[in-house]
Image 1 (cartoon, helix red, strand yellow):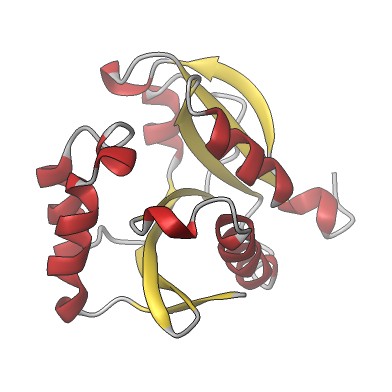
Image 2 (cartoon, helix red, strand yellow; image 1 turned 45 degrees about the vertical axis):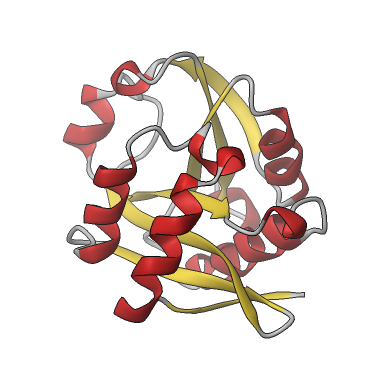
Length: 168
C-alpha cells in the first residue's frame, strides 16, 4: 500500500508545492516553518516521504518530546520521550485510500522496537474529521482537546505503545 522512504533534499520542492495546495494549507498554516523543519530536522527528529504505487504522495515527520516541552504545552499526562508525529498527503487523489493509516502503522511498528518510546501523539484541528478517521484506523484515539501554540482548538490523538507491548 504505502511505504516510508528516506526524505532527501531533492524532495524539498515537492514538499513546498504540497504545502501550498488547498487541502494541505488549511491544516498547515506555517509553511515557512514546516520547510525549515524539513530542511533541518530537530535533534531527536526524523522524517520520510510516503510512497504509494512507486510515487511520492506525502510527508511524515516525527520527533521525541522532552518533559519540558510537554509541560509547556500543558500535556502533563503524556510521558517524556513520547514521539510527536505530523503527516500530510500532498496528492489529493491519494486521500481516502488507506495510505495515512498504513504510513502511521509503519512508523508505529518501527517505534514499537524501542522500549523507551511510550506513546505516539498527533495533534490535529478539531475540524479535520477526515484526519481523525484516518488516525483512528491506525490505532490512535482522541485523548483530549487543547490549543497548542495558538493554532486553535485541536485534538491530541495518541497511540499507547506501552499497552501494545503489554506494559501499563
